[in-house]
Image (tube, rainbow, N blue to C red; front, top):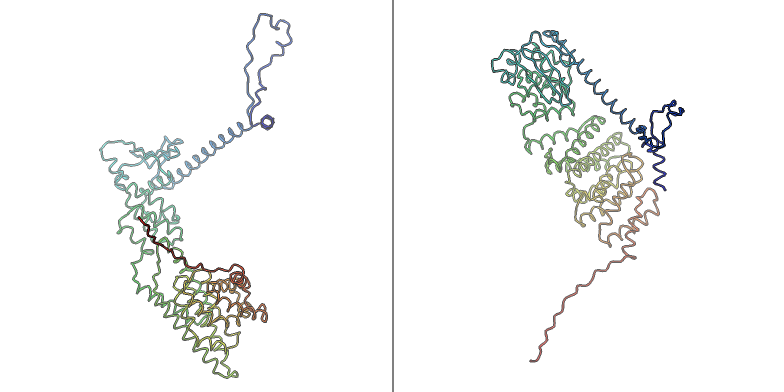
Amino acid sequence: MASSKEVSNMIKQGFISDPSISLSPINNKSRNSPSSSPSKHTSLSPPPAFSRPTLFDMMSEEQIRESKQSTDNNRRRLHDKLARVLSRNPNFADSNNCSSNNLGGFGDGDVKLTVSGRDGFKISMDVHRRVLADKSRFFAEKLSDGGITHSVEICDCDDVEIYVETLVLMYSHDLKKKLMGEDVPRILALLKVSAAILFEDGILSCLDYLEAVPWSEDEEEKIIACLSQLQLQDSVSGDVLQRVSTEPSTSARADDMFMKMLNGVLQAKDDKARREMKSLISRLLREDVADYNNYGPKIDVSRDTLYSLCHRCLSALILCLSEATCMDESRQDRGVIMSEIAREADNMQWIVEILIDKKMGDEFVKLWADQKELATLHSKIPTMYRHEISRVTAQLCIAIGRGHILVPKETRYSLLSTWLEPLYEDFGWMKRASRFVDKKVVEDGLSQTILTLPISQQQSILMNWFDRFLTKGDDCPNIQKAFEIWWRRAFIRQYVPEQDQHMQITVCDYAD
């Protein structure tokens, strides 16, 4: 019943025809005339049935008509465009037999050249054997039989218009001027056709153009791919690729360049320029890391180079803190020293970020955990000046919590033993003073780091946090999720290692 109803609805909507409806010519006169009424013995064949066209049939026919009309319009526009291209050539002269598929030619040509595209579009023109043979080794071979007249056809072209424009270039005396103003994709298309028909002047002119104009990054990739595909001689295409090709760099050379760049940023006097260059270098390094799996590291920077900068930043930070703790609060340059502390801490954060991105941060965790002197000096500086230092600890906890740094449990516990209290003290200032600090991310990284420790160390750290949180509230990291997990591990889902069970083998003697 449902199926019958669906069919009925489709008939009403016009998607299928109603078999009960037929259209046939009706003769009213025959119907009313008595003489026309059939006799008892007369058999009449049924009138021919004409099915009413469905909506689907009408839509299909309309699409076919529109598609054909669109194709015809496109071909007409292409034909007109090609006619304009040829008319701009000073040597062009209309021939008398120009038709819809014949664009005339270049004067009194002795060769009829036909170019047909993959879509079936075809044009013909009259050209000169001498010009084609002189300019193109392909045509020189095709027209070498010495006949008076020739007919040459180039079939299955990707772009008929580009082939015609290449032929126009053969008649041009100043190819550089002819190409001026064209975009890079069109020049690449002309280069491909010139290479296919061995048109040397066209190849060289296209390469000269590409060498002289600026490229976008997308165009650069297309140019490199095109030249690699064409496999032109290095002496021909080498100049074009000089702006992108580099000599294989050695590790020492990369280290020297990278060290110079980082030193320049760390010592920059203009803070705005320093921030911009830090962002630029970090972005480029991340791109290198992102492509590591596919191509390997392109920026081969040694661990020693980065850690030498770490030691330098640590020494500068300790020196600034030592001066700040020894100076009188009334000194006018106290503010300058405090800003230097923030600057050196920011430098340290940047180097640590690079180490983590380059997967070299494991050694720094131990280095930072051993900074007992720095931690002591840190406690003697007002929080508003020192909180940037605690951000280094937060960076390491986040990386450990995400599995980006792998260090032994002794190193993880040493890190928290040295720097967890300073992090607690500075947390309120960190989240208020820096818009780059995500409170939830820091709390999650700290929680995960604590939960990687043995359960006895978890208990010691989390019970200490419990008391502090009750006193400081929001100025202390909220790691109660870690507290809950530790509590369940310790008292609800207690895990007791199974005792080793040794197989016992008993040997019995049986009497015969």
